[in-house]
Length: 136
Ligand code: CMP
View 1 (cartoon, helix red, strand yellow):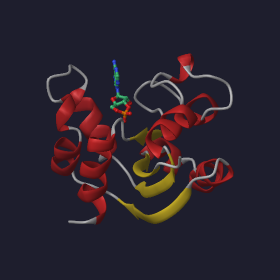
View 2 (tube, rainbow, N blue to C red):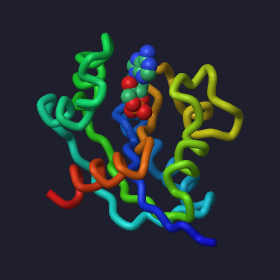
View 3 (cartoon, helix red, strand yellow):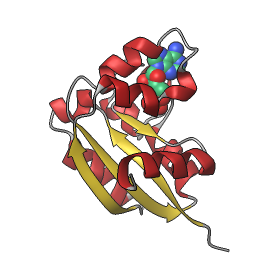
View 4 (cartoon, rainbow, N blue to C red):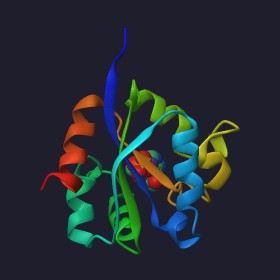
């Protein structure tokens, strides 16, 4: 039975800075994702703090929010059967050093901070994150 879902993907500043957005988008489309909406933007630190508020108690929160707001990003609404888990699999582990071969973070990630992409981690967060960028 099919289970079409939408998930949010962000191509982070380290990847946009290296002009990798077309290569990363191709990895998504080659893996069966449709890009239903996308935009290239730069967000403020306050917006990054709101977006990543689930991490606000973490020691890396401040650096994470500074980083996400440090340069242009590409945000995409992706759709596919079981999109949330499929996106997490295609991204690979948060730390590029631990990511499997063939994943986006293994191929392009520089470090745990500059790991090239973000993806929603649950159905509930996917809806919140898509609304954050596309329905506000
Ligand atoms: P992302 O999937 O965007 O979600 C939160 C981000 O925090 C994560 O990717 C990493 O880039 C960043 N981060 C920095 N340090 C850590 C850490 N120790 N554990 C998890 N995420 C971290």
